[in-house]
Each structure stands twice: as structure tokens, then as C-alpha cells.
Amino acid sequence: LSMMAVTAGADFCYAVEVFKPMAEAAAKIVAKNGFSDKIKIINKHSTEVTVGPDGDMQCRANILITELFDTELIGEGALPSYEHAHRYLVQEGCEAVPHRATVYAQLVESERMWSWNKLFPFCIQTKDGEKAIVSPPEMEGCPGAPSVYDIQLNQVPLKDFTVLSDIATMFSVDF
Image (cartoon, rainbow, N blue to C red; front, top):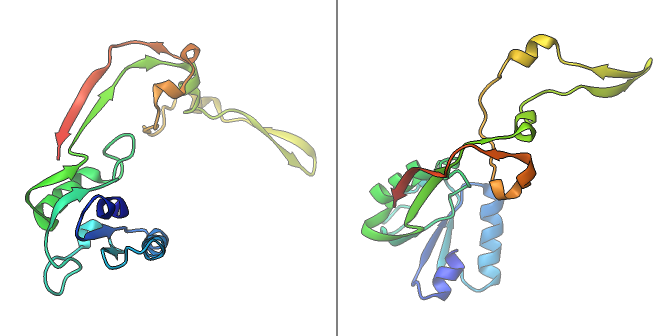
């Protein structure tokens, strides 16, 4: 994203990446593409970045470009990270890309998706031959811990679910 921003005319970019191997790869890619004088890679979580003469960033940025989002919007800590960035890392009234997001939901019924939350018998090879591992009957009535599945209905065959509601807007956020 930083190389695209510089190519599009940005004078200088700070690229923040918390995952060390990714930050190291980014630094190599930036150098190999001749952008080292225009892009500084900061290997920290964005909430640990400092601004000022002795900080990670010399001054607050005038645009915020991120790729914090997973498909649920809230899974990678995007909302607190955006809030922190607006409070401490960018100028007031800066542009944010993306600048808006909406989360939608739809109720569906699906034996296939329900099966993802169940334990099925499986066989293992032992010294006495093949043995089936079967969960106790009591477990069938135990719903277990709620889980969030990253499901896009367009990835599930139409025959595998029944729509129970219209699509509903859960919430929208302006960044």
C-alpha cells in the first residue's frame, strides 16, 4: 500500500506492520523497488507507534490507508486501531482509506454448516486393528462454545442452506 501511495504522489509514507517476518519482507521489497527514501517500515503494533522528533514518525500523517480488515470487520482489532490512529497518529480531518464500512448479516439454516460444530466418529489404527473414536451421547446436547465462522454465503452451494431472513444491516462505521 505504501509503494502504491508513493507512486500516486505521496511525499513520504510510514508503513506499520506488527508481524516481524512481514515487516522484514516489506523492508526488502521497498528497498528492491527503490522506495527506501520514501517509505519507513515500523515493526510495531500501531498503538505502540510514537510521533515526534524522537518518535517512530516525525509528524502526524495526513492520510490513513489501512488493510486491517478481515471479512467480519471487527476481527483484527480494526476499530480500536482506527480510533487510536485518529487520536494519536494522523492529523485531524485526515482522509482515511477505506473511509466507511458496513456489516451485514442474514439468518440461514444449514445442516452442512451445523455439522461444522459437531464431532463425528473417526477411525484410528491401533496395534489391535482399526478402532472408531465416538463422542459420548451427552456431547450431542452440548452446544459448545459459540464460534464465529468466516462464511460468505456465495462460497456455500445454494442447495446447502435455506434463507430465513432478508439481509440486515448490523452496523456501519465512518472512519
